[in-house]
Length: 143
View (tube, rainbow, N blue to C red):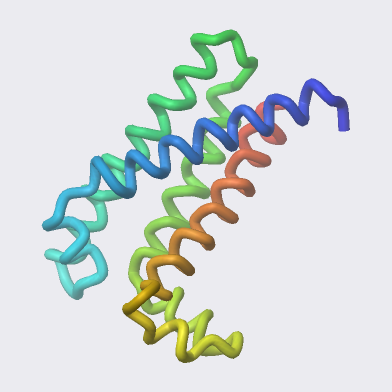
């Protein structure tokens, strides 16, 4: 791998990571957080609103990189953002995170609420892994 390509991957990951935190913790409304894992159209509407706001934050972060002169392509960004939307929406259904914890020997962590909220921490960890893959896709597809 060329050092310049690695630097672009790192910059994209940082941008996606920043966009993730704003999108997941600032842009997401209480209503979306409460209902996004729920059944029926209410759950779909809440999840769609969350994913839209979340990815608007990520697009803004990527546009910041473009404005700074980082070479990104529309195609690469689109592929990375679609991957992010699919994986984020899946993990935010909540049951996948619980299932992963329960099937990897972390049943107690999956149920913990204090002093640490196990499901939330696992959710965030899995999102970060997906953001790294998204960054690789943004640069790999665009390069």
